Length: 176
Image (cartoon, rainbow, N blue to C red; front, side):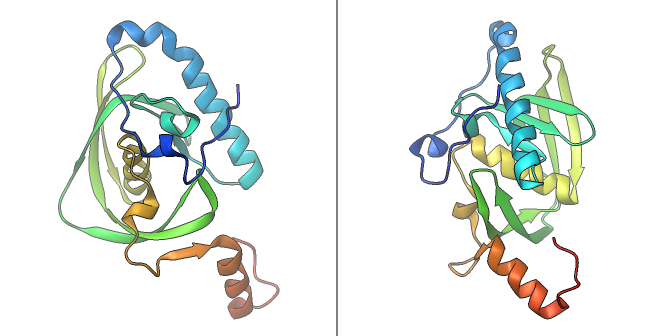
């Protein structure tokens, strides 16, 4: 069932999540369904959204849900950066859907996690997927993109950027 996404300023977003225990697996299906339904509803409304963290719907457990080509559930993920190379990105978040924040993220990372059968899994991520999982992983530790802003001038309203882009590109430019 679609859940309400906690918005910027909600104190629960700043709490650290607790690990899943193996004996909780049977109780997770409803949470995973809620994460899926909430992500899809957000995607339908805002035409964005590739992943969501359980704390964003008020569940303080170490669960990430990503749905790009197929759903992937990350239980108790552990993120490790690979190398020192970083990139600047305009980060957005379901918890502040009309705001972009310029942040630095690592270009490559490794994520180790348990799947829904409690098997150990691992992925090496690069580029936009590395950025995405770093963003979602931060939610598990109570860290929002606003806390990782490059500087105090790194906040942009999406509407303002779209208007600026249209002025520069002309009225016939496609929307972003």
